[in-house]
Image (tube, rainbow, N blue to C red; front, top):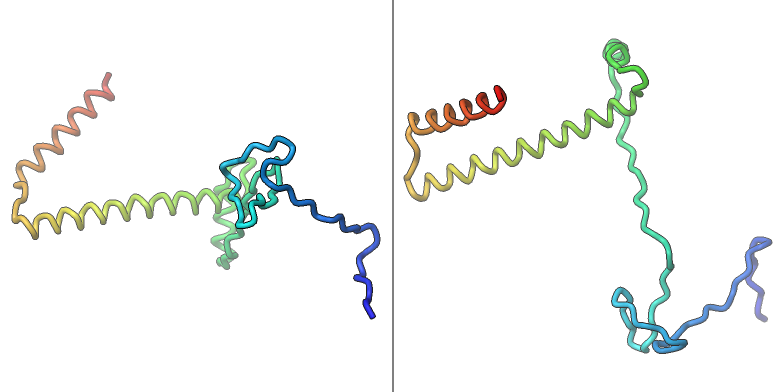
Length: 140
């Protein structure tokens, strides 16, 4: 005996129509990949993937720190917005810091392999030239 599938009221299943390549003047879309039986996979049209936002874990702080934080908020700024901006700034700083360490390690490896380095006077002269050029640019 075959039992009918129970569905909530108002939910009706339509039979799935598959379309073979070439029907009704279809043009093959390069984004669609043909399957072994020469049928295109069905995909939703006119939809864009939307990334869901993620939640950062809650941080427990002392009441004094929370009061201090709320005291420095700008007018109209929320605690969530402040925390988000702080996290973004920390991530950007870590990226810069990581790149700095990578460049330093590469320079050290180059020195270890070649034994060639710049003298202190050469380095200080280059830094002074950069500083002078920046000051001249800012002075106008």
